[in-house]
Length: 221
Image 1 (cartoon, one colour):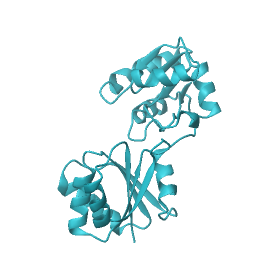
Image 2 (cartoon, rainbow, N blue to C red):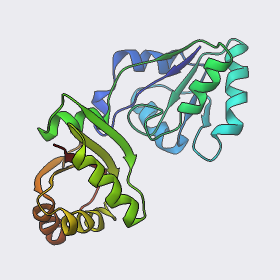
Image 3 (cartoon, rainbow, N blue to C red):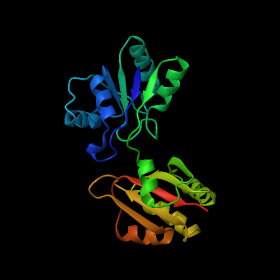
Image 4 (cartoon, rainbow, N blue to C red):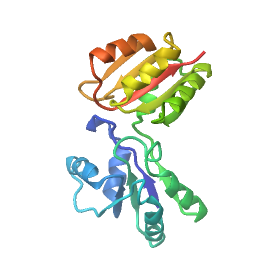
């Protein structure tokens, strides 16, 4: 059995009882970054578990090893650095392999930056679209954001703090009145939600350079 285990997106106390149990019972834990996961496991008092890396650069070659281990009777837990494995993180290809190999797997519910930001933004929740990270190319970024403005409901993106001002510049130039929200450092000490038009948020972050992990939301029609 392979268990896909969500981990906190910031506050370590957000881990679920089922997630802790799955990590305790695992024979090995596949981590997006073992250096990142090790402190969490230590905080939970989980020691002595073999940790293997499972990230975007080695996922394809690591999958056969994990599938073979599960076939051999091992219980494997899969975690990303934060939130749900498979959401802009490793995990999707492994689930596809499980389906192809008719191998049992379980996905545990838990923390998600996408849903936390959606609810906290105050933007419409009846329909929403999550499109991962915005493109590094300005033309593609603008196209994605203009499509979001045409969508029913809310569209969410992950964005780098180093590129947020550039993204807001692109949007504010074309659609200064677009309704946006920047959800930053969710569940952490300095969590903030900044809501306003693209032009207003651009002015704010030009004066207050953004830091930390960011979910960028655009309200559609």
